[in-house]
Amino acid sequence: MKADPAAQSTLLTLAEVDVEIGRIAHQRRTLPEHAQLTEAEQRLQAAKDAVVRAETRAGDLDRDIARIERDVEGVRARTAKDQQMLAGSGIGAKQATELQHELDTLARRQGVLEDEELEIMEEREAVGAELDHARTDQEKIAAEVADLAERRDAAEADLDASQAGRDRARTEVVAKLPEDLHAEYERIRAKGRIAAGALRESRCGACRLELDRTFLAQVRGKAKDDVVHCEECGAILVRAS
Image 1 (spheres, helix red, strand yellow):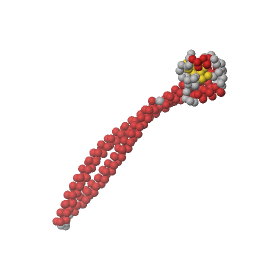
Image 2 (cartoon, rainbow, N blue to C red):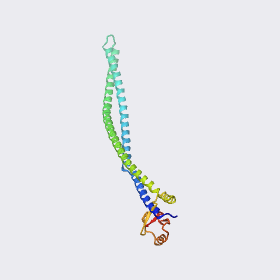
Image 3 (cartoon, one colour):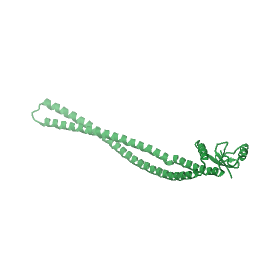
Image 4 (cartoon, rainbow, N blue to C red):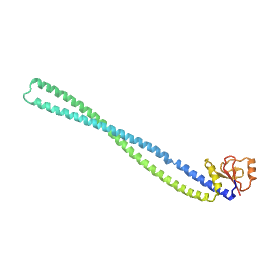
């Protein structure tokens, strides 16, 4: 392939722009906010799970308390009824004894229920404190996630602006290149390599390797408009005019 030496030199500008574009892409992938946000989102999900667990436990305990209170009310109502019957006239000794026995049983039952209710209420208080803490933790982490997302978006916006500038510069440089030379450059670049580098003394500007003397002698013997490639990395070697 042949190309005007000036056009070949333009490839160096294109390669510099592409290096900058690659650097921007790397910066975008490795923004610290990405990892920080992922970690914070994981902590936020864990905090949400903790809130759900505490809310579920609190709900279960509230239902238990309500059930016990209903049972206590039932015992109190039966106790009041038995006491009214016991205080009434016209009951026999046997019935009075049975009523008194039932009242004693009801009193024990009420005591057991009230003790159970007290124990559950104490647990409910502890779960309530745990729930308050979990909700506070969730709100704090949610604010951290929002802040990190804002910082990430701002960093990406800066990179977008830099990317747009480099894309415009690339378009302008490409417009100056012959189609076949540009196509050859893109073919090499598609392999993930730096596609062009200046030949400075005996070193390739793309891969930075020292080149063989025999190869260099061959390169120097070629016409100035011949397009030559580095024997090490395959990049287009741009010779000084």
